[in-house]
Image 1 (cartoon, rainbow, N blue to C red):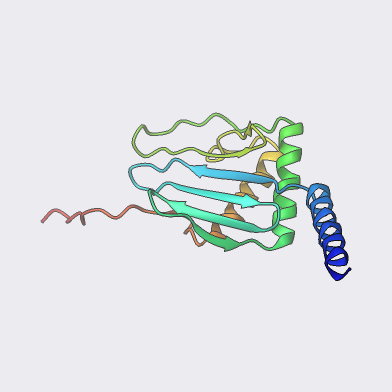
Image 2: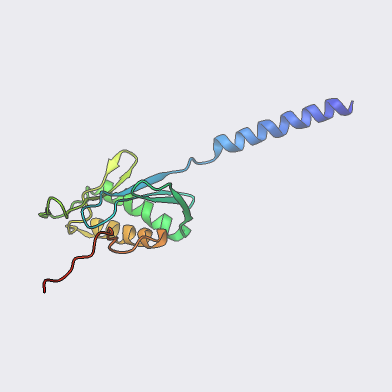
Length: 154
């Protein structure tokens, strides 16, 4: 009798857990990629809707970090608004070796290059969000690649 009760209880809890997992909203995620250039390191930040995130620079192994929930909610709301409103940036000239691109990919939508000035508030919000996420991830405002020191002429 006890075995039967345990089996029924186990089946009930297994079914309930499956129901809860199926009913739970799936995690959303977005990826921020800065291509880097001759004088700046590339980086990749993945942010998930539960606040978990990871950052990698160059070929480094992704390092996990946590984003405050208010920041995550604002970021995903701004992404939705930018996609819906077709956010754009002003075309800007870049050096072939010193220029980089910065884009956010979310639900198969790719943002305009956020290193160029935004044309509207939608793009400006994304630029602000990316700056905040970069700071939370521990990436300096202008990551500079290390190279040999240049000596001034005598």
